[in-house]
Length: 238
Image (cartoon, rainbow, N blue to C red; front, side, top):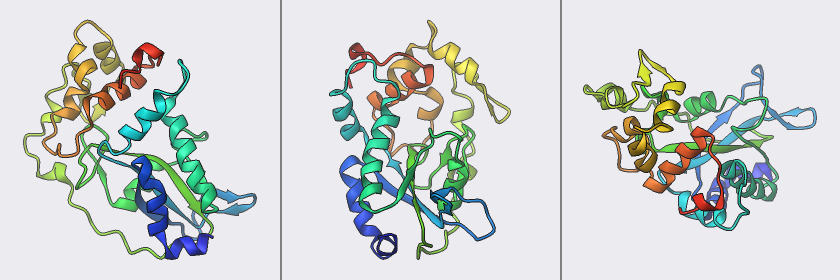
């Protein structure tokens, strides 16, 4: 089935699309580089990155989430593993995820697959989606994929002289190229953090490349997860 997949990636894209997920790029591993395991004793030869662009996954995920029992831990990871896992089984592939341990180099794979560079916030800047995208998993293949070489991408941050993301954070959590997660958490969880809690990260929202900005409910959900808050039934107003 993996050989067939290489010829018909459109079928894989069709299988992912009902859940708002996209094919986000491809990596062929060279024979001399370490690669994750495809099956027992067999390294993967390639992988397909799976993720979202903009809020494409929000409606299917939120519909699923409201039907889950209260207090479900890591709901977005759970949902991602379910829906991507079904596709992996259908195409005889192995699914791996950013939350798996030991940690897999998803950021490196993404930079390699799509030719992206990090924004000042640390999020990879995409030439179409801006800061509003994510990688939810990867599908490992046992054969090399016949995909074209990655073209050099325009890095939108290089053309942004003002860089509002660096001077709009109310917590001053971005300084000298470093993200201070503790300062961010203290602010968002504190008495002065209501704007971020209700509308999303102020620094991220200040980016002018906002065509694919996540809906407010999705941004709030991600911030709740960042703060490590509970996801009880009272927080399911998505």
